[in-house]
Structures are given as C-alpha cells and as structure tokens.
Length: 450
Image (tube, rainbow, N blue to C red; front, side, top):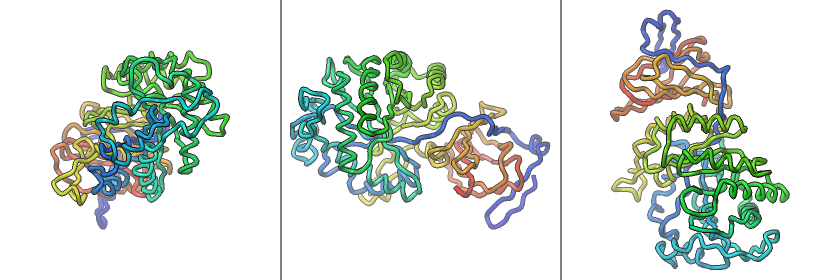
C-alpha cells in the first residue's frame, strides 16, 4: 500500500495485485448496474396519551434534532383516523386534555357520515384536530430541520381504521371523499399536501371488509377525485402485517380497473411470515408492475441493520421504517434536559445507512468475495458520488474495488460497543479503497463533500 499521512487524511492508492495479497475480502462496485431509488427513511408521528401535556415535551426538540441531524430521518408517517369524519367534539376534547386516553381510544375510529352525498363535502362534518396536532407538533418542525439540512421531508399520510365489519369508508366514493377532504384541509390550513397516501394501515389485522379488491376500488375512486381537484395522487398499499399476504392483496388490487393509475409503492410490514423468498417475490412483482417497495413497519427493536440490508438488497426497498419517532431513542435519568437521550441499540447501526444513503440515491451493484463476512450495499448519490455501507461479521481488511478518485469519510459502529472516530481517506487515483475493521460491526464510506 502506498500511504501518506497528511493532516488527519490518509492518501491511499493500492495496486490490485498488492491488495489481493493483503486483503481479507474484496468488494467490487459496479456502477453500471442499477436498482431502486431511495425515497426516505421513515418514522411514525407518535400521539401522546395526554396531547395537552406530553410526557416527552421537555426533550422533544432534542429528540427531533437528533432524529434529523444525527440519525438521518427524512420521511414521516402522518396518520389520519376514520373517526376524523364526525361532527363530534370528542377529538377536540382529547387533544385539549379534557378526556382521558382510555376513554377516547374506544371512540377514535367511529365515523359519522358528513352527508348522504359523497360528491359534496360538508366541511362541518369533519374534525381534523388530531391531524392538526401532529402537523404542528412533529411535521412542521421536522420540515424546518430538513430545510436546514438542504433537504425536504417526505410526508406519507396513512389512513387508519381498525374495526370489525363493514365501515363507512369501505364505500369507494365515501373513501374518496374522505381523502379529498383531508388533502384540501392540509392544503388550505398548512400549505402542503402528502407526497403519498397509504391506503389502509394493516388491512389484514382485523376481520373487516378491507380486502385487496376493496382497497383497489378505494384507490381508483380516490385517485380520480384527487386528479380532478388538481392534486397529484400517489398511493402506497397494501401495508399488511403478514408479509405473506402482500402479493395476494396486490393481485386483487391489480384486478380493479383504475386502481394502478396512481399506485406507486408496494408496501408490507414484517410482523409475520417474513422470509427472503417472499421478499424476493415481492421485489419481482414490484419490478414487473413498475412499483417501488417499502417495509413500512416492524417496531420494538426488531428492524436491525441485518433486516435493513435484506430489505434493501433482496426487497429493493425505496422506503423503510423500523420505529415511531419517540422510539428512536431512550431517555436517561436526566431526560428533561435532553442530555441523556441514547440511541436504541439497533439505531446505532441503522443510522449509518440512513445518513450515508439520502433521498434520490440509486442503488448500484456491490459484490463481496465473501458474503459470510462482509455484506455490502452501494449507492450512487445525487451528486454522482459512490456511497458504500457494509455489515462486517468479524475483524477484516476490506478492499473496495473500482471506487472513484477522491476524499471519503469512513464511519464505524462496532457490535462490542467500542468507539472509533470517523476518519477521512483519500484515494489518489480510481481503484481500490482499503478499509480496516478491527471488530464486527457496520462501516459506511461516503464522499467527503457530502
């Protein structure tokens, strides 16, 4: 290796023959073969049990700072419940702290038709106070933080209606009216509309009428109404709890005329029957039908970096969610100051992916000579630079082959909890970048200009 230490930067240029003799694993980057484009790293906007005085209010600003600037979150799931179609003030009273969470939760999905005509919206028949609370408490502050980062927050607005039996919004035109009323409310009140609408959260969870066909009919009707009103519809579906149900729902959606006109993301959760085989079938279906894929929920610390790597490489995910916002970090004994907020265990590793791979990055081919020890994923960023993140199973010396000339920031996170500062490495000419991992963990390699 030819190496020169200059003011904290290492200049590295390694001949292929020399490298093969000294490297444990060679990783070859092939920018000519490309896959999915990243849309965002998602969290769900969380609702406090007492919205008037949330338990996390003292450290909320610190949490959002860390979520955006340290962890790399850039997409939010904003939820709207079926119960927003109502003349009742129950939602308002709950948001104001005049009603307990336990009392409110039994009524939160109860919908009351605004009128008998789904083509005429009666604004007085909707109560969006919960939605507005989320926007003011979470969405607008995160939008501002992303602007400071030179980026934008992607908003996924998700319809939630857990309950048994036939519901008001399983009527396609009533559903379309609800969607349009929500878009118009956000547009008129806050000046933005969702980037994408998640059709129904976990339709396979309850014994209700949210079949794949019902979802397709809702998508066809809502897409038409939104387009007629001058909006640009985009839908995510089916967002099932059981990954094995994804394709049966998707096939049924596909059977409905007009359902695919604005279908953009094929989405699933990982709570049941997740497997690489099913994930591969989802990716094949999505590619055949010109859809992006997204794993949009597996909470409680289950969605670690190995799951993330599988969803990116096997599932070709463009969007991914492993936590609600409040779950990203855990407060310590001095949480009221925000000083002791700590990353959840899996977030320590996932954030290396999130920060390295930003919205608009396109995955390119990365092949490891030893996949048991080094599993890579590579992307071309929006400025044309090459980004690589690797899951490393044991101490290794890794050669990244066919990397462009330039300066790279290398960041490490070790499974044993050991610490190592990021370092700057300069590749003097196009070729092989040499990375040393002293123990198992995750390492990211990002152009320093990023």
